[in-house]
Image 1 (cartoon, rainbow, N blue to C red):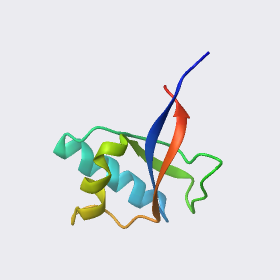
Image 2: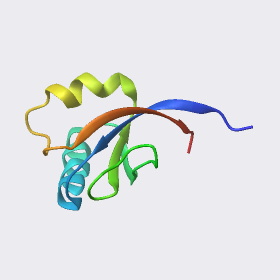
Image 3: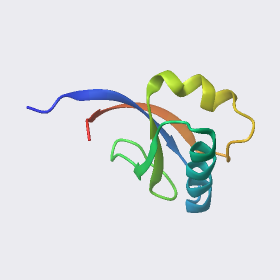
Image 4: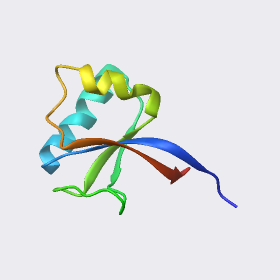
Length: 79
């Protein structure tokens, strides 16, 4: 049986904002990836940034990140 782990999900109003998050995180060497928004969370664009929950403070306080819709912590299967 696959194990679920807690993941940080950052949702965006637009696909452009999600893509900007991917670019900024790649330039800074921050872990994470783009992925679909889980069914338990709603989003305007359907794309979210997935990261470890330990990184939440970094994303909440960072000034150069694109505007996001919300930050959630969700149990998800490892991929």
